[in-house]
Length: 449
Image 1: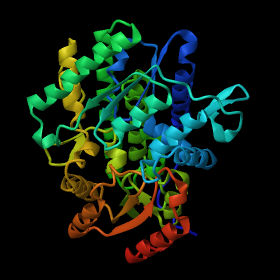
Image 2: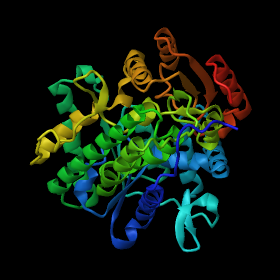
Image 3: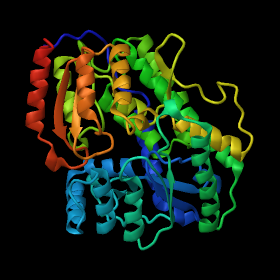
Image 4: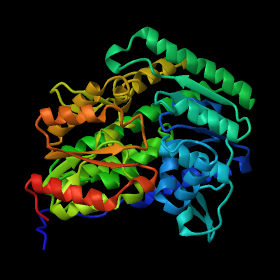
């Protein structure tokens, strides 16, 4: 029987996590019933900007939606095959293919069953894909703008606006580069007013920017608590927590949840030595999106007392970080914590763009060495024994330079295991082969079940 070193317990906030997620999709689905607006865009979209159109404006972000489909293996297969039948290549982004397939089939991944709204795999008849009123996207990954160009075509001409945010790594940001993005956002606001027929409210924009910064700062603070031994959270659990920020970072409810509910609970777990894995004896991190249909591989690792404390993806997809005075990585202070007041549209957009251009997961689109530096930092500060790299054929953007990352980690002295798969297409993941590689990796680390 495995040695139990630490106490463990279920997160107290778990029900609230599920409620926020379900209400998000329900509100989007029902927005038109009360005269509200729906818009669609990516998880990295500058989502505070559409908030200025009113408090009844609801988004659906594409990558989390594609991941929800991937978790429902039967629906995912239907969507992927429909996309391929329509002539789109199988080596494109798997999230994108799931999303397009959902539109082509006119099947939404969520529906009503027994009067409650939830995921389709619980049963119930599929409902039609709720058509957005406009598309608001930004472009840094190779497929972002093209993703929504096709959505616009499939939905027969939904108005689309896309912002180019690929202005270089955070080390090279200048006022001119910031202004380039800010001016696009100003154009986008005018476009939204013409497209929707609504007047824009700068006070709502400022409120949303504050919420966005608060959500992304507090999520980084939560992740930093996993430096503790034992780790209070494991990565499989963190996927269900970070996703709220990928849905709607600029919402009051998400920002309040991270700051007032999740962060205090995780701090309490650290104080009481509540562990995610009670027999923790090995600490690793992963990389990029996991194979969503096979998250049980993280539970397989727990047989070895191995906890995945997160990853650059989990920490930096939405979290905003900075180097502290002692040289360690920690959350970037919110505007209020830094004593900064945003009073008008220009100030809000300028601050917002500078904040987002520091996003860790944007940096390695420019050079793999930037990602390697961040991964080595995590490996050291979070006291890791090894690293697992997912050679993810489903995401060209986040897998860019991953072989170079492997070499840099090895050179820095960290053992690395690689496995192949696809975050959104179960046909490209071999579970038996992956668990066999995990067995071999644990053996090389001297870890026994």
